[in-house]
Each structure stands twice: as structure tokens, then as C-alpha cells.
Amino acid sequence: MNKAVIPCGGLGTRFLPITKAVPKELLPVVDVPVISHIVDECVDSGLNEILIIISPHKEMIKEYFKRDDKLYDDLMRAGKTELAEQLRTALSKADIRFVTQYEPLGSAHAVSLAKDFTGDSAFCLALGDDLTVSDVPVAKQLVDAYEKVGTSVIGVQTCAGEDIVKYGVADVESTDGRYNLLKGIVEKPSLDALPSRLACYGRYILSDIYEYIDKICIGRGGEYQLTDALMLQCKHQKVYAYEFEGKRYDMGDKFGSLKADIELSLNRKDFGEPLKDYLKELVKSF
Ligand code: G1P
Image 1 (tube, rainbow, N blue to C red):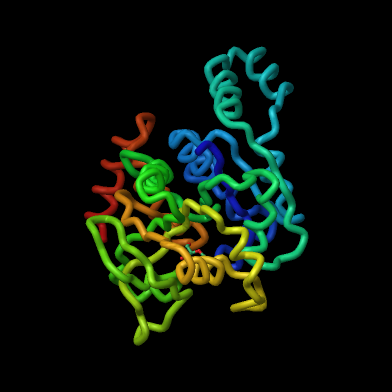
Image 2 (image 1 turned 60 degrees about the vertical axis):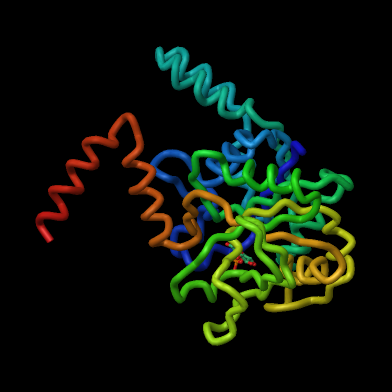
């Protein structure tokens, strides 16, 4: 498998006002946009053919990934050779293509636009506002799980808190280690009707999905929902939820984004240590 699809739909209303002008996928973790981290996760997982699905008001994402020879020349002329090379290498790691979803018809509709790109092969779906950090990239963990089971695999983790109601939640038939065979998935269940505590966190390996997308009707919010297609797939084929290792941040949420900013910054070579000292001092003053 070498293909990944990154849908960048959604209006980013939880992150207004900035998302009025800047797509949430371009909001930075310090100096690198979320989407660039996700592309890196895919590339580090051996998925270097990438399709990004944008809406008409997210052309800026395309701009970000465009090779900029003028900037390269300007940086070289200014003696910033290392930075110039870094920017060029970052862009050359993946073959990135774009397709536009002209109407907000939902996640399943967005995925259906990837059909020409993926053909009948399985592919990774990485949602554009879920950032993951782990020793083995989460997409790679799921690719490996797919190699074992040969059918769709959904990345999940235990969500102990009340915000589980924001996610697709696994309805589990049986469990074997990190693998959970699914009866179904319930999209955004209420707290008193949780099928489990395993939340879908925006990473999937999808196999044979288009035949189920073709069969679903308009669902929640008047949109075609991927969860409905996966639910249907569970009824006809085996589908697994795989409990991945690592940390996931909800980058469409202001607090989630702030946590990622702080935690990823603490690991930076350039200012991780001074930031640690700064935070220690700051906490003392509370
Ligand atoms: C989507 C999916 C949901 C999943 C979530 C992960 O929801 O529909 O199943 O758990 O992404 O971030 P959304 O965030 O679009 O409401």
C-alpha cells in the first residue's frame, strides 16, 4: 500500500474567527501546519502518493504545497541555504495531488472523490484535523494491522471522558489484543448509549469501501457519512478497530491545538529546554 487520502472538509467553526480566513488544516503547530505533519506521518508510513481533498475555499492548502522557486532563490541569495534546502526537501518527499469537493456533502462523499486515485486498492484515510504523535507512525501501525487482517481497519483509542460523544464509537463483537472485530460503529452516541469506550480518532485503512458508499443514503446532518458506509461494511465483511499506540490531538479544537503546540514544542531542539524552564517558572506563579 502506498496511497493516502486526506480530506480537508469542514468549515472549522470550532476554531473561529481565524478559520474565517485560514483553513484549520493550515493552522500551525508553532511553524509547521497541521496538514504538513499529517503528510509526514503518511510518508513515514510508506504512503507517498497522497490525495488531498479540499473545498473551494481551501485553495490556500494547494498554495502551501506548491513548489516556490522564487522563495528558494531568495533564500539562497540571502545565504539561508539550509532553510532553502529544507523547504525543498519537505515538498519533494511525496507526490501530492488535489481534488475539490464542490459541495459539502459529507465524509463519505469526500472519500468517493478518491476513487480514480486509489482504484480498487486499499488506502489510508487520514482526517485533516487529527494530529497523531507516536514512535511508530499511527498510519504505519494501521497499515501493518491491515496486512494481517486483509480488510478495513479503523484506528481507535480508549476515550475515558465525556467528550467521547464527539466521535464514532466502536461496537465490538470480540477482542484479541489490540484487534477488535466490529459489529458496527455508532456516530456520536449519547453518554447513556455508548457501545464501548473505543473512539475512532481519524485514521482508517479502507478496503472495498466504495461499494458500501454507493449504497448509503443521506444521513446525519443531511450528509453522506463515512460511518454509515463502514456500518454497512461491518454487516457484510469483517471490519476491525485497532487500538493504536501514541497520542492524538484534536486540532479542530482550540484547547486540543494548544496542547499539541506545547507538547510538541517541548520536544524541539531549538527551544524545548528554555520552554520547559519558562513553564516551570510560570506554574510557580499560579
Ligand atoms: C469525524 C468522524 C468521527 C470520528 C472523528 C475523528 O467526525 O465522523 O467518526 O470519530 O471525525 O476526529 P467530525 O470530527 O467530522 O465531527
